[in-house]
Amino acid sequence: MKKFLKTLIPFDIAKGLSITGTYFAKVFLTANRAKVKQHVVSEYPEVPAPLEPRFRGRVQLILDEAGDPKCVCCNACAKACPTGVITIEGGKKEGRKTRIPTRWDYEMERCVFCGFCVEACSFDAIKLNSQFELAAYDREDFSLGLTGAHNVLEPSPVGKFSYSDEA
Amino acid sequence: MPTISLTQSLVISLIQCVLVVVFIFVVVPLTVFAERKVLGYLQQRLGSTRIAGHLGGLTGLLNRGMWKLGKVPVLSYWRGLPGLVGDVMKMLLKEDILPTKADKFVFWIAPALSFVASVVVFATICFVPGTFFTFPTWVPFLGGLPVSGGIADVNVGLLWILGMATVGVYGIVLAGWASNSKYPLLGGLRSAAQMVSYEVPLTLSLLAPVLISGSLKFSEMSQAMAVGVPLWAIIPQVIGFLIYLTCGFAETNRVPFDMPEAENELVAGFHTEYSGMKFGFFYLAEYVNMTVVSAMAAGFFLGGSWLLPFGLQGVVNPYLASLPSWLVTLLCEPHAAFFAIKIVFLLFVFIWVRGTIPRYRYDQIMAVAWKYLIPLTLVNLVLAAAVRLAM
Ligand code: SF4
Ligand code: SF4
Image 1 (cartoon, rainbow over the protein chains, first blue to last red):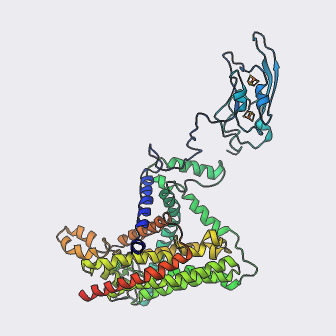
Image 2 (cartoon, chains in turn blue, brown; image 1 turned 60 degrees about the vertical axis):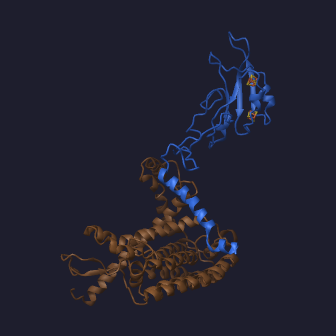
Image 3 (cartoon, rainbow over the protein chains, first blue to last red; image 1 turned 120 degrees about the vertical axis):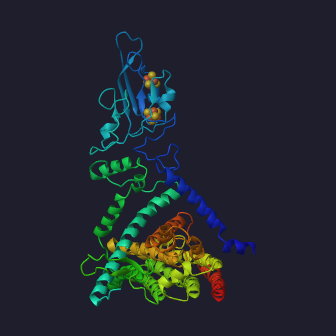
């Protein structure tokens, strides 16, 4: 009898309708203008995606006060890297006690963004920055060095490398 | 009233047809668009807010423009509207594929049948009883002539509607058969079984208004149901409305009863082999059918072109008679706008239900029709008969 009544009077359907109806009213009345968002989707390219503090983006060298890389060319990161995408050659610079990299190549196309290189570095000379819009049309754009427009010392120029040329 | 010559009446009918077609072709695309937006909102999404394409050029410009629109309160709901134009263009321009082994004539006629059957139903649907508007006297040829609220408000209007709705089933079954492919055939047969099953409670639930109003004419029925019934006639009206709506969902193959096109089982059901504008006709027919079902539910149960649903208008009308005359004209008299608003609301309910209830299993659908809806409609019919007896 109870089952029969439950089938006859559609309580469950009414409950479901009220839930979706509430969602509709909330999202419809606030659309995308509210301070507190009622909708769960984000409108990514226009609204920047929120990133966690521990987000692992692209490898970037940290600079010291003089503007030189803090890296001392110990090669610990290159050895720790599981995909072997780091190649370092050390040189000397006037007035600096430690060595300074003359070559610091990073092949981003094979990097798995694991962060082992950061853990291996005892000199706080390397970090994974917060960039993720790194797609490019050319393989060469993924080979980063100390020089050039796309290098390991600065963040990647967004727009040139993450957007198509037609933009 | 001035006498009307045959030519004049023909021209007036033509004008009515154009008005109805304009109404359909305004409401249907907007429903397609609203479906995307409302389904999104119902599930805490935003629906379509941009269109696909490059970041530059026209699409980029449109997308950036729509993003700016999103900041303006009312305009933000219209983001993604250009996608509708893209849809129409795609349907018109896409290659029309004819399967080699398909029955060419039937394959061609099926979408037309389905679409025409759903549109012609509007002939007997009466948007407002009596005169819709009168031409001003300065209009050449037609000056001073009244235009009635329905194209052909015939005495057997309901029979015409139900008959034509059944012809629409042919479109689907023939499409399934003519495609010469197993999924469309299964979809078409399921559709036949489902529609034949739901035709019964649908017709039975409409018998209650017929019984109470004692007429088959759309305008008379809607008038009788809106202002001609006592208060307690609300019980058969509400039950009948819910049953009718359920059967309407099934008749138009909408979720939760979209068995003919159950994607996870039948690819796309009866229109698997269709592409281009032939598919477009099926797509349009579905939405026109939704509008028809909404119009009938609005006319017979929600008080038609009167303000209040379920016959409440007739109950409150005597109390309102003391109000200022313009208020009485607004609240107590029929208006085509009320009818249109009710149709739009019911279309929203269609989408609301789609966004809430998942598809039933096939045997459940049949069980709902035969084990619950039909006995319920019979009980409802007895209630309606009691109302009629006491009236
Ligand atoms: S993040 Fe991982 S893969 Fe990338 S350079 Fe560092 S160690 Fe190598
Ligand atoms: S581990 Fe640090 S200091 Fe050593 S080579 Fe790598 S970046 Fe330079």
